[in-house]
Image (cartoon, rainbow, N blue to C red; front, side, top):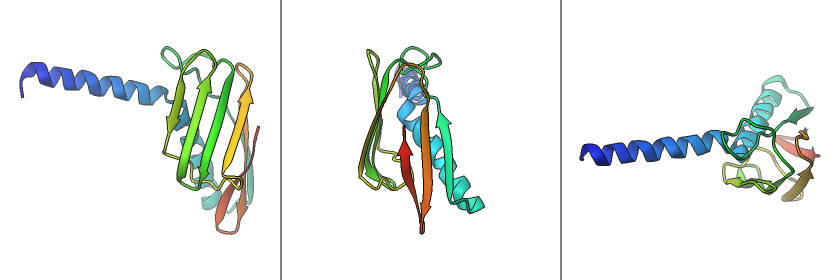
Length: 132
């Protein structure tokens, strides 16, 4: 492989990694999965937490504008998507390890407002009982 081709591949990998770091759909998924793991470890039956998405624009460190979060699917099989108004649309098929009883959930929030997520144990499953 030529040095020029190696440089190009390295640059491409850095760009992809940079997008992954800012991918808010993956970040929300990781936050939910961390709570699921904690519930399983401690035996908790219910947990409520807030999650503050970052902007999908620029370096991903700024406050998010008006946004919508969509979950399609259930328990590891589906899509998590976040859409920032006048921003970007991020989606991942790395779905959180939760059951969405309705199979589809959509929540819209005003600029800078955090998500409140409630997880509840239902037998061996952890359900996403509320997201607002």
